[in-house]
Structures are given as C-alpha cells and as structure tokens.
Amino acid sequence: MSIKYAVLGFLSWQPLTGYDLKKLFAGSTFFYWSGNSNQIYKTLVQLHQAGLVVNQIEQPESGPARKVYSLTEAGQAELRNWLLSAPESPQLRNSFLVQLAWADQLTSDELDALFAQYEHEVEMQAVMAREQKRRKQINPARTGREAWLWGMIADNWIGFYENELAWVQRMRQQLAGDRETA
Amino acid sequence: MSIKYAVLGFLSWQPLTGYDLKKLFAGSTFFYWSGNSNQIYKTLVQLHQAGLVVNQIEQPESGPARKVYSLTEAGQAELRNWLLSAPESPQLRNSFLVQLAWADQLTSDELDALFAQYEHEVEMQAVMAREQKRRKQINPARTGREAWLWGMIADNWIGFYENELAWVQRMRQQLAGDRETA
DNA sequence: GTTGCCATGTAAGGTGTTACATGATTTA
DNA sequence: TAAATCATGTAACACCTTACATGGCAAC
Image (cartoon, rainbow over all chains, first blue to last red; front, side, top):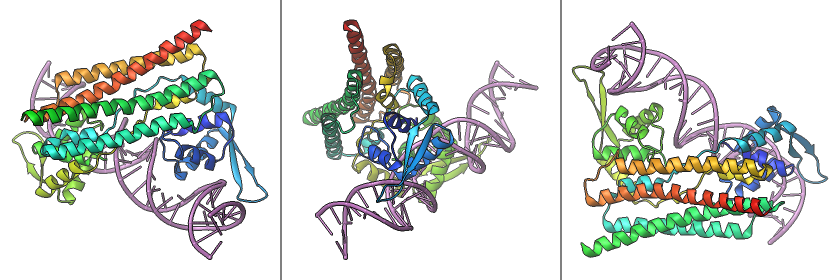
C-alpha cells in the first residue's frame, strides 16, 4: 500500500491543501508516513493526472496562494474500491529481532543492557499510543460506528506495544533466572 | 536498518556465497527481505569495498565459479558494534488499520466481511509462525543461550499474530453484538 | 530435450527519507 | 530583527522489489 489511499481518505472528509495533508501526516504516528513535501505534492499531482482529485487555486488577501484539492466521483469510487479490497496481513519488521539473532556474541551484561534499552523504548511508545488515544488529535467521529472504529485502531496500537513489553519483560526475567542458577 | 548487518551476521557463522545468502533470506519469513539477487550482490560488493568482507573464488570441477565471502576482522568488529547499538523501537505499518480509518463508509455486512478476511489472513500467519518455530529451518543453536534467543524470536512472531487475532475477534464480537441490539 | 537448480549479475521502477530553495506573513 | 508558520515545490539518495540476462550442469 502507498500513501495514495490515505490522501484520498483525508480528502473524502473535506477539501485540503498539500500543506494541510503534510501536517496531518506529520502530526500522527498512526498515519505512519513522515509527511514530507516531496511525497505529498508528488502524490497529489499523480492523483490529479489520474482524475481522482481536482484542485482550485485560492488567493487569500494576504499570504501565498493555496491549491485546495477535493475528491472527484472517480476518486470517491477508487477509495471505496480500495476499502473493499482484501486486507493484507501485517508484517513485522523489527530490526531488534535481527539484532537478537546474533546477540549470543554478547556477554550477559551487554545482553541485559540491550533488553533494558528496548524495554524503555517500547514503554515510551506504549505511553505515547495511550496518550494519542486520549487526546484524539485526529478524530472524525461523525457517527458512533466511526468513533468505535477509531477506538479499535488506537487499541490495536496500544495492544501491540503492551504485547511487546510483556515479551521483553519475560525475556529479562528468564535471563536473570538463568544467571542466578549459573 | 538495512540488510547489511543480516549479511554480516550470516557470514559470522561461516563463509557463504551470494547464492547461499539469497536462499537463506528467501527461505525464512523472519529475515524479512525478499532475497533478491540485486540487493544481495550489491550489498556484498559494498561490504567488500568497505573492507568488511573478503572473497575467494572457487572453481569446482563441475559447475559455475563461486565467490565465497567471509568476514574480516573489521567486519566482525562492525557486526559487534551494531549488536551493541541502541535498538530501535518497532513501528507498526499495518495497512489494514488505514483501511479501517475510513471503513465507516461501508455497510456492516461489508465491514464484517473485511474483518473475516483479515482474521483468516492473520490466522494463517500465526500457523506459519508456529510451524517455522517447530521446523527450525535456520537454527544455529551452538550454545544453549543461542537456542533460547532464537526461541524468543520465534515467540515474538507467534505472539504478535496471536495478539492481532484476539483483537480482530474482539472487534467482530462487538460488531455482532451491536447489530443484534440495533 | 525440457525443466529445474547452481551461480553470477543488470535494468527499471516503486516507495520512502532528509535536506534544500523560495518567498511572504506572523509572532516573539 | 530574528524565528516560526504558511505554502509550494525540487534534488539527491536510501532501500527494496520484480523481472530479465547469461550460462553450465543435472535429472526426469
């Protein structure tokens, strides 16, 4: 999947400029793209060429011109089509696991230090995920079902980090247990 | 992180050719790179230029010539350095969650069909993860601690998919409950 | 004698990143 | 007056993917 459908999704709520989209992406960890201009403006040009969006240039009394993009009917159909398409299974790309694969070369002290760092990292992510759910930075919630969906998305993130946290804590306990008996 | 350190890791076990590495990557979901020649041969050239590996050309009586790569001391040091470096926290890139963000546009039937597909996908991944742990396709296990580490890596994968499965099942129950009372 | 494996590589393109360029306006 | 925000975009590059090119050898 690419950023294309996320852009179509945002535009299905309301017309937006590239700059608006940039801020939306940059401001949420959930929409995990960095929100860099290159990608967003290029995507908008492509969507425009494909006839999925149109833009209207606004010249405010003060400040730079704005290109406000909105969905066409074709764009709305493309989005709906994608929403109905078969979901991909998530794939884990955790470089820490690759690190562990050869971590037997480290001493037990070094290994535990690594675990401690990872635990700390994951804990921070868990806190941030809970905080993002509480603050509801982006929250359409125009229907009860939409609010429920967004809650479930947030829970997925929180659950992921909590699961990861439990795993690393279990590892640390086992490592400590081993070192006592050794 | 890039594939570079995984290559150094494999070479820290024993000298290997590009083709060997290709098969190792292609044969395991855990080392999540596709195992395409382009990346592997290019990586080997780069590692060679950086002095982290050396190669020896073997001409067997029959068959094509093989470039057997092995770690240099600098390569070993580079690997160890990376093993000690601060672990990155894993970041979730699940396109299904993005799909859900706008799924309020779908009917409840369409939504549940989507959930069912996702549940099936994740269940298959969980089965495969358990199977990979059982089969131990790649399994150094030269020390007890190494075997333990590899077990924990496998458990991480299994736990991830089981967690995801529980989440989607919870969602489906809630959706079904809502539709009954509605 | 065609298919598949061994073994090396190249070409082209998708997707994403950081950093830079430009210029006006607003805030400290 | 210096910095931040608004707003558009380009340049360069990192990483990864599929598909293709080349050739010998083995198995069926």
